Amino acid sequence: ESVIVEEELEFQQEALRRLDEELLLIHENREAFELAQTVCPEYVNADEFRLMFLRSTMYDENLAAQKIVTYWCRKLELFGPDRAFRKLSILDLGEEDRAALEGGGVQILPVRDEFGRGIFLSQRAYFAGNMARVMWFFIHDILEDVDV
Image 1 (spheres, helix red, strand yellow):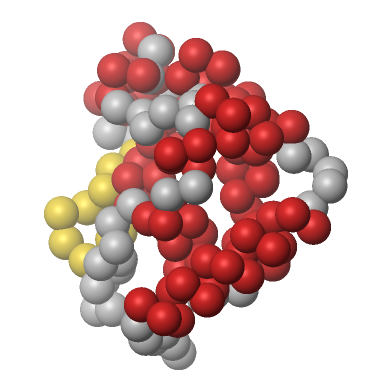
Image 2: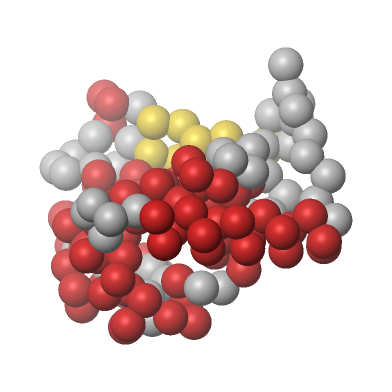
C-alpha cells in the first residue's frame, strides 16, 4: 500500500526543524557528518538535501537523522575526502567505476513504476569490479528527484 504525504511548506519547515533537533541528539559516528558541516555547510544544510532523507523515511525525523549521519560516513569511506563533500558527477567516478558503469550492471530505467517512482535496475551478471560507488551514484541520482 502506498502512502502519500502532502508536503505543504509549513509541514516541511516543521519537519526540517525537528530533523535539526534529532541530528543534535546523535553522538555516535558523527565525525564525517561534522566534517561535512565544516567543509560544505551549504550542501549539508540545504533544505533539498535534508528533504531527500525525510521523504525517504516518510518524514520520520529520527530515522532521517540517522540516515544522514550514516550517509556521510559511507560517502567519505567510498569517495575519500577529496570527493565526498560535494555533489558528485560522473567525473568523480574512477576509471574502474566508469568501466563498471558502462558494463550495464546498474541502470536507471527511462520509465517509472505505477506510483511515479524511478526504477533502479541492478544486474549482477554484468557487474565489473567494485560496484559500490557506481550504485551510490545512481541511487543518489534517483533520491534527488523530488518527483520520485
